[in-house]
Image 1 (cartoon, rainbow, N blue to C red):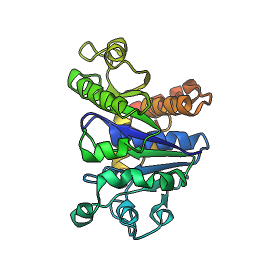
Image 2: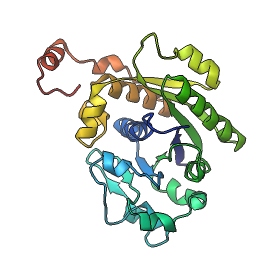
Image 3: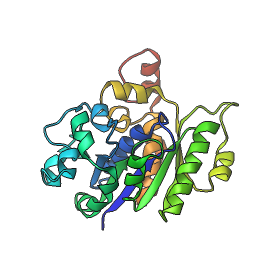
Image 4: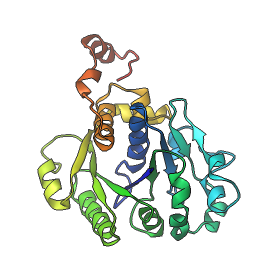
Length: 260
């Protein structure tokens, strides 16, 4: 049966949407059938991240029973499937986030793995997406405000009897200011699935309107997402196999185009 994995966070700006897209892309990299659904209805960004901010048919149309779910699916050239939400305020006002859970069977029918990008915070939209989850992944940064909000998201999810798969820490700089993995794990009391380093390749991929797993497959961030994906789906992956060669590192140093 399909597994619905909801990507959530206690606050915005921690890399939740970037993680949802790249986790989906990374699972797809390993040959799995994956869909990423933008359940951040008020401020949808999945379509924007992938260069399709407006599409003829979107998630809102499906939630309003205007179309079948298959009509709202768009396939990336990689094979990754995407269901964007509408940027229209008019369409947003018609959708009730608390009704999202009523469509769980429909979502389960579209792919083997379904990644839901939830709204940031812990409002009605975020809680509506959490209700859909078979498993939850919390995204945070290694800073006290973000970790504190992540803890709130975890506690609320546990109250709803939702399985917490773990936390993904993004924008890791490994300096003396940010919180260490051990401290984060002790505070959140859930597994750390992976640490995604601060990487300019992520910003470059956003500019190119694609996942960093696609645009810079040998980058540190892309390899981190692939390591996390491999762990989630239970396959072997050695990130050293994607380590840039010395020639690629030299090319990057001299500003030449490179896929890392």
